[in-house]
Length: 286
Image 1 (spheres, helix red, strand yellow):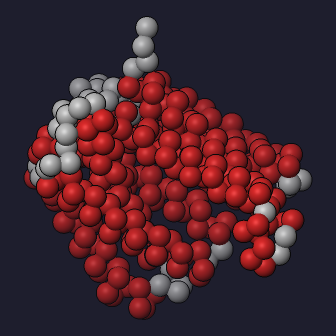
Image 2 (image 1 turned 45 degrees about the horizontal axis):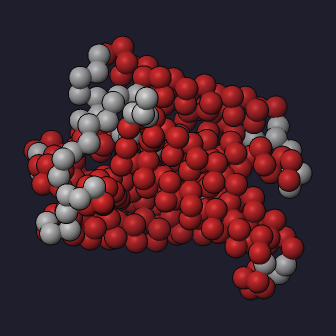
Image 3 (image 1 turned 90 degrees about the vertical axis):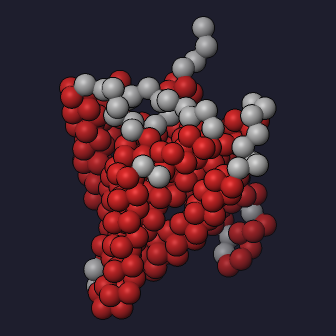
């Protein structure tokens, strides 16, 4: 019996977290061995870089098969993998509360997996375009772009250096549009490989352009946040904001919760909050 799309997405999301979590440790060990730019000659650093690329590709494909409600929160597992490997390989000990955070993340992830909705894969890019141009999602996009403009033009010059929510707000809002665009591109690639050519549709290239613009903005403001504020604060706050907004965008555009009963939706939300709590605990104790 074959795997369901959700199962494929789940396996890819977990594999992605394992690869990405491992990549941080491999790169850090490589950097510890050398200094300056000689890390470019260090095989261990390159192993970490390749591992990260593999993880990101797996995460990209996971969005093709499973809803963002399932895939995005599982990104927290990369933090657990990184923390556990750091404990054994880098001798960066996990505190008792850190273990509590890991267990909390895993528990929340299990709840999300159990209650995750089944993914309905659109049959063409034009179907995705119809979802992207529905009034509710257009309102979300308009609200998102309005807030981003306000943050960039008004709040960043005044509060960017003192309030972490300015940079991370821009980054997370654009990130939510990145994910839905990347999901559309991934589905277009999958359909094309299956023999249903989607390259001929201008909508495919529109989603690709939107994704490229959003990724550039996202990386730019995330780097500004990391340069300005402590990483221990940036990471959990960004994870909470990005994950929350991504799920909201996906639920509106792809109707992830359509057909689910209130109990399942409530369970998913509780699982999501549990994962967020575990992530914050784990970061706070590292």
